[in-house]
Image 1 (tube, rainbow, N blue to C red):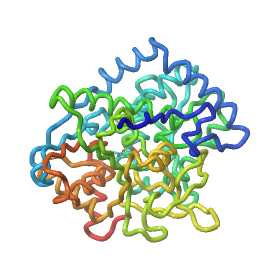
Image 2: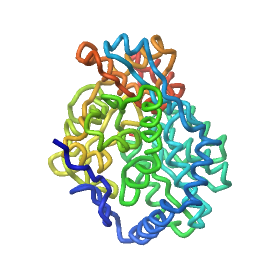
Image 3: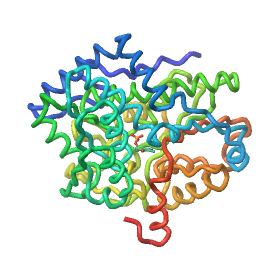
Image 4: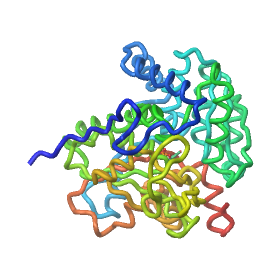
Length: 403
Ligand SMILES: *Cc1c(COP(=O)(O)O)cnc(C)c1O
């Protein structure tokens, strides 16, 4: 029996089923509509697509390899494991696929200044990088706690000519950085484009970021076919805001034989304030422009979050993921800080690859299910970023001094 096609394109108000939308102050409605109109025009524009493709190839280094990880497959007890090497993108993570697309769009819209928020610093680095390449002014907002956890990336952004503004409000992490960036955007909207870094926020961001990241899944599909003549049986990715996962999953949504699993940050346990697993402890709410699953208390106040990885430490998940979960198309799970750090070590020893701590969550799930993978399973894992930025954090964690 054939299953109904999944249509996950949002409606014209930006809703994926009941999720998404544009929940912003009046002052941001005009810039969001301007952006949505520009994106609608350029996403189909052959010259825009050509320019994006050329930069992805020559500057980012696409297509990234699909690598058969034989030792990992042996450890997991399945037929094969393929790693999609987004860690080999210029700047070391998938983030640049989106920063580049949005910077091209900003140029088409006549904006000379770009701003961004960053958590782990990877999105800030990617945005500072493309801003330098295009000669755009660049300001990055980053929580003070994250600046401490990710000092290396702060140095990289400043070396690339970006201004890094410490955010001292609230929990001093990603959520507060997004609020500051939105405040800047309202004030400077005539000259400035806000490059949001994940499949989050108000329409058109979840759609636009998903589209720019879908290059990951499109390449994986093509490479799997060429290398093995088949599609993977399972896709695995970590989920912060959800951009690497949605980019990886999206081109496979209507291949119903492909199982998909998104892995959230279980932190130090599913207790209030100790994790960032929105589908384990959250419910529908509105945060920073979008209606989606989020961690909140019984009065609807945003809950504190925790994860060893700064890039997964956010109270809400992208709205398209909420729909995919309701549809049962993607399964969501979580692993703990401890399991993620163990997976970081394991991948280094078995494959000679140090993954980002965010990515290590996907590997932790894979390793944790050793004995439960089927003998003929072919598992594809999105290796969203490299772990160089995290070595100090891992060392601190092992000594019980992690922030
Ligand atoms: C930012 C980041 C993530 C989490 O963000 P998503 O939008 O969920 O992809 C995951 N992995 C790496 C390497 C990152 O830099």
